[in-house]
Image 1 (cartoon, rainbow, N blue to C red):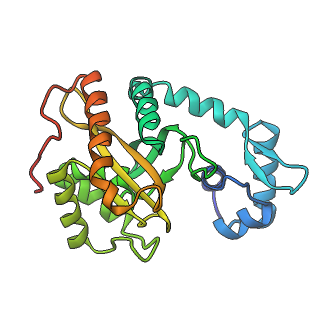
Image 2: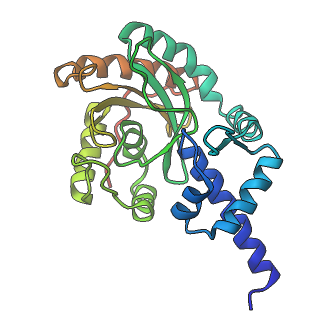
Amino acid sequence: MASSNDLSSTAVERTLLILEAAAQREGGMSNAEFSRKLKIPKSSASYILRTLEQHGYLRRDNGDGKYRLGMKVLNLSRAALGGVDVREVALPTMRHLVDRIHITTHLAILDHGEAVYVEKVEAPSFIKMNTWIGRRMEVHSTAVGKALLAYLDAKERDAILRQRGLKKLTTHTITTMPKLLHELDRVRQLGYAVDDEENSLGARCVGAPIFNGDGGVEAAIASTGTINDVPRDAVPHLSDMVKEAARRISHQIGYRGPYPKLVDSD
């Protein structure tokens, strides 16, 4: 028979899984979808969902009955992001970059082995990118992820990749370690990373690392568009502008070394 501590731990874990799943599904999820996706009994999921709704962490749409993140979670996220100084510094540069290139630009940090968007400047366009602040993504399949990974020391990088694995998200995703390490070498040589339909078909991204005053990678910036917005022959020119924006932000948060910073791969 499970102890009360075990039952409490399970309930907390299920609650966190539900909140994380809601954060990943912008359109919301129903009780049945939570239950099926997370393998939680429907009655247990229903109880947790009602409790989170009562406390404002989720809200239930009266039209489709789906649960979405509530204001309580958004307030917590704003408080957490408020401590990330690089956001305030980066935002004016990101806006200037988007004014020049007319492509949506994101700022991401590394958190528990995932790339997390902490800022976004949307390009004025009829086609909107399906991205949002707080979105968590795999590091091996995204431009921001590869820009962050490339400048970690080998031990930390390998630990993340062992833990997360190399999931195949599209037919273009890199799924073998030798090929990914070769790609990260290329990122260090060129100073920028490319996601060429590796995370989402039809999307191409160019990203670059942002360094802090200690010379470590603090964040990454990336411009994201459709493959028509960013044709392959435009990547070199776009990369120059993204790298320049990353260099400016790096210097503003105290980095004084050369850009891009080259490090040993081993």
